[in-house]
Length: 112
Length: 107
View (cartoon, each protein chain N blue to C red):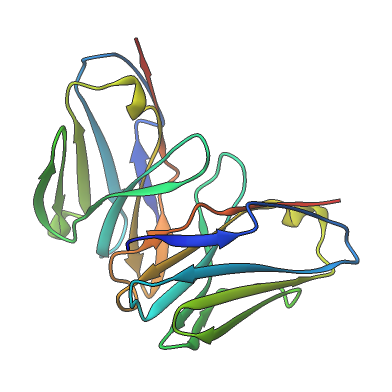
């Protein structure tokens, strides 16, 4: 199984809502990543987990809160987002940090 | 700042044509990858190519790490090759993507 799954596919939320994005992989990978991609721009790295520990946080606002409950799961908790946070959120995994990354299909988030 | 430059930014081809996409890095890069992003946003792995040359069907890639560039070759292009092609690599413990090359293959 070389698949990374993400749920939900689409999410519309208000600025006062709390929601979570979920990412799952069953390839035995030990590194997982969150990226944010705005329209017509390249993906930008947000967070890196290596062996279930947060190793890199690219100065992301605290309204984004990552969580890695186990080696197969990665969550991104969202709270009090702004309309400019609307984007495609991509999850990826790799055998070890910075090795070949495999991406999920993404969650399209709209903040109203 | 650290730059990842891709060229050309846009490319329009007739079906069956060949093309070369280029990725230049301003600093030493590790773990270079090429991706194809389809119209639905899915990033598809094409090559993991820190150095050397690899081929997969109609696609091939070459990375010359000492000269800080990588090339992606597409031969006999098909309409399904349309989309955005990104190169990405690890520079100073950060994964950086180029701005992408938007390829349109016309029938």
